[in-house]
Length: 280
Image (cartoon, rainbow, N blue to C red; front, side):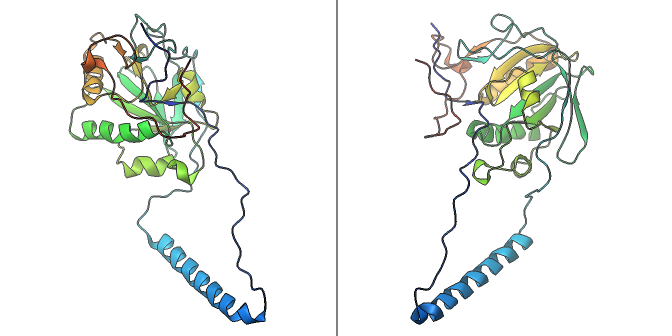
């Protein structure tokens, strides 16, 4: 029997993760004239330190970008129903996902350099990965996907496209996503989602990482949620490339005994406000 407990390898969708603002920085002050010399010396050290930091910042080998991390996305077609919530389904098929067989909307967006990127019925099978920079499971998934691509294990006729979504301007949240993906050597096209995550929502996403597998006509073949085992990802890619049927994968918490079909069990982050609470 399936359980409604939140899987441990995915993060819930919640963009309200901005840190508290308005906190003031401590100030240095002298209580009397006898302390003024000491205070001036401290201030001088602070100025010198800030100057050194500014110098390092201006000369560091960094990809930090001040370019817009979100952008308008054109969405053409009917939205996809939400990913199944009632069971811990890691990979769906027609047996448990009414979206399978539905035509996904066409997405027309831009990458971080402003180049147009499309998800459309152009004859090529695709996997669209919706990734949130602040999601620890996405952070773990991206280098694995890129390593599979780098080592030639992605079928040549399958396109991989990332959608950077749920963007939150907070340095402690692995921001900005452009810098994160460049740091991981991500080579596939990227679409910037808009401020309201409309692309993610139009594809029925409810958690991260989230992937939608499309045939050449933009019809949904399967969907997956959460960080998957490397071998599961490869099987999905290969089946998509050949047009073979895709088996559903039930995650931990269900009674299924096939351990090889379960997604990677990654511990929950402690006290992360963006995580979904387990259902009662």
